Length: 116
Image (cartoon, rainbow, N blue to C red; front, side, top):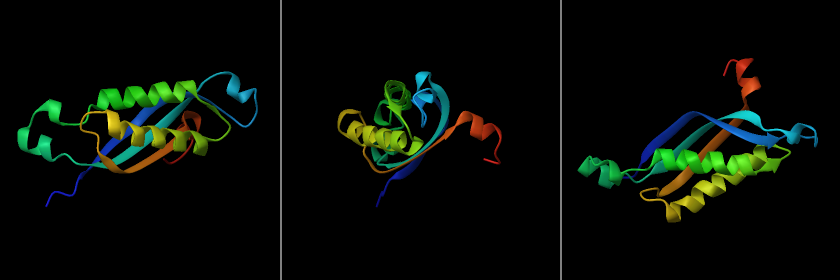
């Protein structure tokens, strides 16, 4: 039985207007996203054909576009909006049938000064 495969998108750079104050939200900040999906890849596993798998370029493009359009006070709010986008893409994107989506976001300055 094929239960799905974990797919990871690591260190995806996104620009978004995030911050507690209006001044912080005036210009985009660089964020780093980690995305984990569990998706059905049975067709791709059997065919070994690129068209049968998730289009990672399209997925990351949609995430970057959405992040760029948003203005939120909290990273948590933006992360939730991006997770909702991935779930919505399940219906419109070829071969993206994810039952599980996990996304983490951090400010790129935080990454630079942490043990991440």
